[in-house]
Amino acid sequence: MAYQNDLRASVSHSTLCHVAILASLAIVAVAPTRAKAADAAPSSDAKTLSAISVEAVSDDQSFNVESSANDKFTAPLLDTPKSVTVIPQSVMKATGSTSLMDALRTVPGITMGMGEGGNPFGDRPFIRGFDSSSGFMVDGIRDTGSQSRDMFDVEQLEVLKGPSGAFAGRGAPGGSINVVSKAPQMEDFQRGSVSVGTDDLVRTTVDVNQMLDDSVGFRLNGMWQKADVPGRNDVDDDRWGFAPSLTFGLGTPTRIAFDYYHYQSNGMADYGHPYDTATGGPVGDVARSAFYGLENRDFRKTKSDIGTIKFEHDFNANWTATNTTRLSRTSNNYVATNPDDTKGNVANGYVYRAVKSRNSVTKEYINQTDLTGKFNTGFMKHTLALGFEAGQEEVKNTPYTVIQTAQNVVNPGKSNQYYTNASACNAVTLASFDCTSLYSPNPDDQWAGQVLTSPNPTTTTTN
Image 1 (tube, helix red, strand yellow):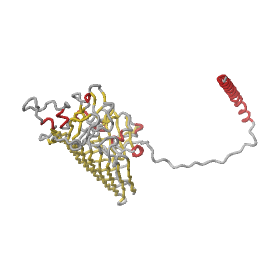
Image 2 (tube, one colour):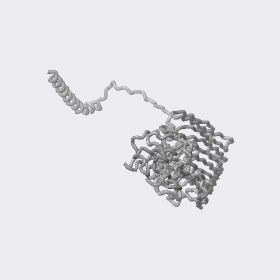
Image 3 (tube, one colour):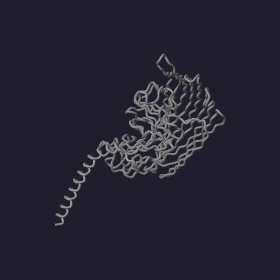
Image 4 (cartoon, one colour):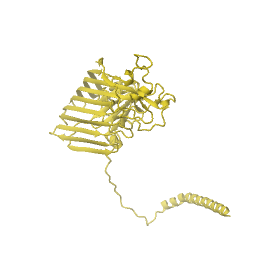
């Protein structure tokens, strides 16, 4: 009986719904006729409401950027036949980006490499599938040093996708990235930030701009950070840097700017989890926090020093010449543990602590001249950008020779012979901590091998 009552109730409700719909249709059908009648005979009771004024302050956190900071772009981005993504300060603040990797997460079509294939451990973006680490520019000038970049002195990032030889010269076909530095402005301000978070994060930044005269501006940016990496045991990311800049002739036709950038980091290189060669994928049941490196062996230190002198002159409202000279030195120095499974150790619950290392110094001496102008021929308008660059890049790599403990142990089965299959986990390699447990690695294991500097450095010079 209860079921029948519920059924009747639902039928009644359905009937009411149909009645309501029909009534609505009737109202809609009648409404236009009444409206016309109302237009023909306006009511004498109609009242005119007073005007309402709405005022609001525009949001300064706009993500829209209309033009590039690079003078080689001769038109606004909307009119440039090129795929360009600009990441302004507002986006970096909204996303809390402190590194280049953080900022580029907002750009589709980019993935970040982690030193695969023997390449340096550092900023290694892949744009449209191509390694574009050779396509880094700082204020329109190439910056190829292997490093990890912080955002404390960055005004905006400009990502060009696809071949961009006209803008960046030689480089990867995937695209290029131009880092626009903070420069003195014609106003006084003091800004700063303090960040405190989990995993022992403490970070502070300062940004001070001061007009020393009517046309002389000074700006100082600084940063200090001490932090662990969330979710990773024994992995830290400590860094600090400062960047003073001084510009003469602000607001005048002739300007000369001096700026210096110093940045260095000291942390732990992290190659993550092993790749299971048996299954062709990652090991699924290992804790995210598992770290296979060694505290008494592994490290990563980077350092960058960049000095720039820039001269600009406006001949008139249409023509501007710029000459920039830059000297830079960048170092990338690390010994890192690569959790290796080339011998099938993962299937037995072990991981071999293979070693990746680099000790490189990149020096660059570059002078670049640009001329931009506008002119007309009849009814046609033209914009011209000319450039000439001369420079030298030198990369010197003095790699480390890492001698695993097991390589110095005599094979008891064959007199006067060393273990040749040291990457296979066995009693000897486990006792020497060249191997460790897949599920519970201990970064504090007292590894007793040797890290030596190779006597045969490799130097590559590009003119």
